[in-house]
Amino acid sequence: MTYSTGATLLFSSLFLFSCKNAPDDDFLRAEMPEAEPVKASTTFELIPVSRSGIDFVPEIQESFQYNFLLDPYEYNGGGVGILDIDNDGLQDLFFTHRFNGCRLYLNKGNFQFEDISEASGVAQFSGLKTGVAVVDINGDGWQDIYVCRTWLTNLPERRNLLFVNNGNNTFGLKTFPKKPASTTAPTA
Image (cartoon, rainbow, N blue to C red):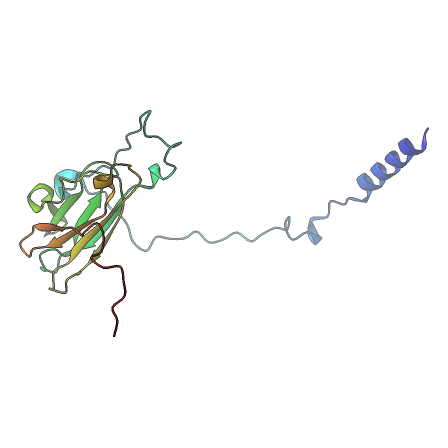
């Protein structure tokens, strides 16, 4: 037997025989006490579309030109905004769809909603939506909607959208100039 073979055999046998299987001193293998099952404090109920009126389904539309390899954020979805567009105290719902138009549902009470997307003016805009924020941007007491868009190379479909609440369940699109009028700081 050569020196290297003997050394290998010696270290291998030391390694194998030095390991002990003693669960009482190994905290990872120790017996854990059985935990009490968690009891639900609330129950959820599936509300059918026929009752709620909400039929929004954010379907993913993969194609050769648009897929996960080109946009790893494809499966992130768009966004959901909860707001009160008519100041009646009921929370209305705003959904963005990655490619298709946005959807706005007016809360009629008793968990029933009316789709007012077309009538309100928010459904007509395409582009790749990535999120939504609700804010009273002009301080008039009516909540407005800001929609983030991105990724597409066509600049008009990439610009973010600001829907200003007109106070009558319709929204006007606020546009901004492409460049500021002045890029220099005012002097005193």
